[in-house]
Image (tube, rainbow, N blue to C red; front, top):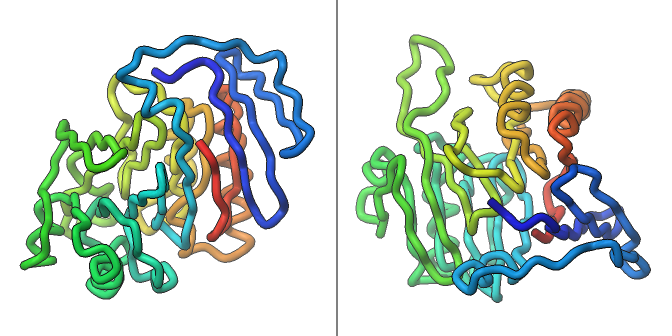
Length: 268
């Protein structure tokens, strides 16, 4: 469980916001230059947690399901797939997490670009992805596994992709919790047991998704912060409608919803 005063800086094309999230759910916002958070209380952290909670981590949303997390100058890529603009800067990458084998979550071309820029990068993925990649340096992970690479601590949850239709095989899928801050379930509604989720990547649109299911998922997780993912199958009108519904669900648990667009960054 995270500390009671998580401060977020929300950087978008529309400017910079700092967000003070408190346990009572009554977060306050302030201008990035003049904000006053003098009301915040300080809580000491055990030394073993300080590296994860005190060091800032930058989350950048790309198109669809792809994310880049950056901490201490190093990067973690998640699900760089076919619906994401070609990643041309794969430098400083410690790891790539691929949640499952569908092409909207990874392609050979996206992986090759990152590996060429960061030859020592490690790949974490379920067995189906490892089989599809073939000769790549993949560490196979499953529900309950954990790993540390650079400044990133990874914990994996879940077993199967959500059902699309009975005629379509259900593949392996793992969600990932990064540094006890960000949780992203891949193409599933897996709730991480025993985790108070600070930041949730909430699915917005998919062949396996009804918005009512995504709303129920956010209501069950009760994240302090949430943002949309898996949205490139939606029109602009569809994205707006999904954002409205997911914002409502996030707010029911006292959280704040951030309608991130590709290229937007959240400091967590």
